[in-house]
Picture 1 (cartoon, one colour):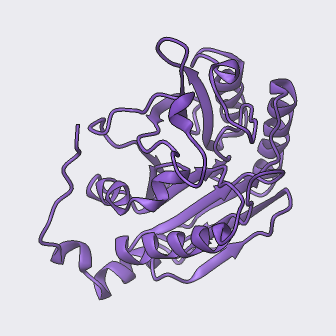
Picture 2 (tube, rainbow, N blue to C red):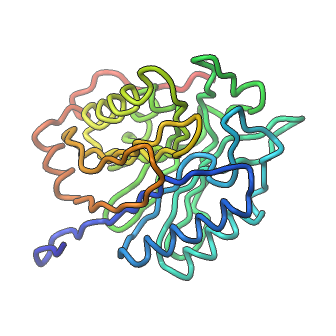
Length: 273
């Protein structure tokens, strides 16, 4: 896709809906391949799912944790440096005591670690209890927003999608796109909830949404990209897949001009700490 002279060029985003297991080496191999696909597609940003470094559908804890200077983040930085493709990816970090931290890291196209988001809303719902294994991130931490081209990508993860306040904090930090790495648990109505919530967050935030789920046992897949107007631009099924989509800064700007709901708000989000 080409842009008119003087226009803001599109930002190409590659979604890697991976099947991730307990073997961290195999997970890194899958990430290596995803970077190859993204680079060949001319992507500016690669988005990997939650727990992309290692996963157990029965629960992820400290046994899957790696430090920020460990092999998974090192691989992200190395591949971003080589390819020029920025990346947003879910991982697991060591926490206090015997707990871990569900985290998302953002690495820019120069291979520098741009920031870390530690999941605020732990998944204690639908029969799951992440808080038995994980500690939450601080609700008042600065929002994680990564600049890629002419768009700003704000980061949340999985269960956060059910909390519109999280999206509001990101658009208040000037995010144009909400990025949601996830391992969305499978179950009755769960795929429907996932899609409906992604569309809702886009419409109410007048922001595009890139929601990338894991594929495989116990999770839903069905990664989806939604425009700021609520139109679904790309949707995958439950199988592992890698695909790309172009996001247009001008399209998001037009939606926000036509529907200035962010400017019309009468309430602000205050983190509860």
